[in-house]
Length: 133
Image (cartoon, rainbow, N blue to C red; front, side):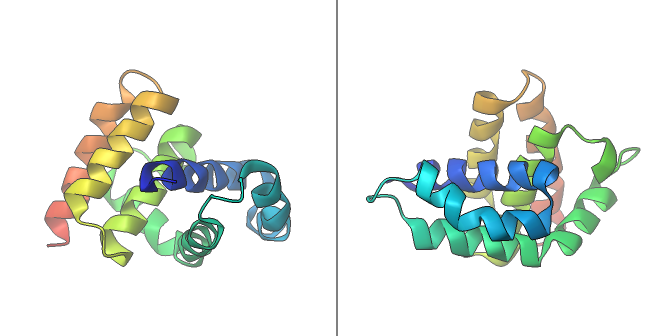
C-alpha cells in the first residue's frame, strides 16, 4: 500500500471524527480499520498517525485558526478541515517534508473536495510552512 493510500484512510478517519466525536472514534477505531483495510494495508501506521493527530488536535486547530484570517475551524468545510489537520500534522510533527505534505493535501482536495479547495488548502499550508521553517 502506498503512503497516498494510507493518507486517504487517515483523512477519512479524521473526517469521521467530526461527526462521531473524538472519544467515540477512538472506541470505533479498531472496527473501522477492520472494515476498511485489507491485510496488506499498513494498519499500525494508519492507527498511529491518526492517534497522533488526535493528540495534537487542539494545537493543530490553533494553527488553523491563526492562519485562516476571517475564518475559524468551526466555519471551515469539514473535508477541507480534515485535509488541513492531516497536512499540518505532517508538516509540523512528522519527518515528511513540508512541500510533500502540501502536495499530498492538494491531491486529497482535488479528489474529495470542491474545485476551489486545492488552491485554498495550498495557500494555507504555504503560510504554515513559511512560518515554521
